[in-house]
Length: 313
Image 1: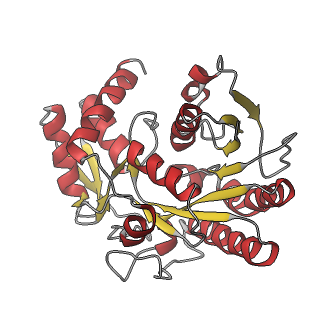
Image 2: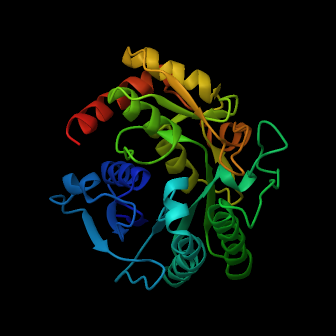
């Protein structure tokens, strides 16, 4: 039985990855310090003999006894609310945490996939964003702690691949949604859904013309699975190129929920990207991957989860 370590396992993406790899017959070791994760996301896995959980901060020390085949490094705050509250920890998990896990991969001769982000492109000057684009990032702005942590993560990962011949994979994740997102995540989808379900006005920043592209979590997990098992070591965008403005997205959520709550506008946060759309040519050609679940279908599934959470919060 193959053994895989997943950091950030109690988070939105980490918990879905644990489900997928258990289903595929792997023994999953999950680590999380619960700074932004939720233990409820993985409680259903505790009775499974092929799942182990360790409360661990990967910026301090990482130890896994015995053999290890794969590592998925998904430990990191992932929303502006989080990394503005804990900026130092955000930088440390991208830098020191990645260093520790690359060292573990080297020691165990394990293949490691690191979770980078579309935020490495910053406020892009090229649209859509291909992997060859170097980005337009403000390193000292409020979002710099996250953006630069991920850019450093990519740099040290490539250094370990080149210098130590560690088997590495780099995924650049674009906006993803689905069950197990936090109500207070601060990103557009959980904010709009939770506000609408509570009968509150929907908050749109700027004039709402900035765009995002939303990928359903099952599609993303499939892309991660394929990339991990591929022979490609350079960064790969995984996301849904179906682009929509945030104002139109707010209206879409209104219609889905059947509410006429008003939309209110607030000042655009500093360095907020105006466009975000992945070029997924590489994912199509190298992995044979593209998203299968349309936004209308994915939002219906996600809404049921949010209804339950809002009613019980």
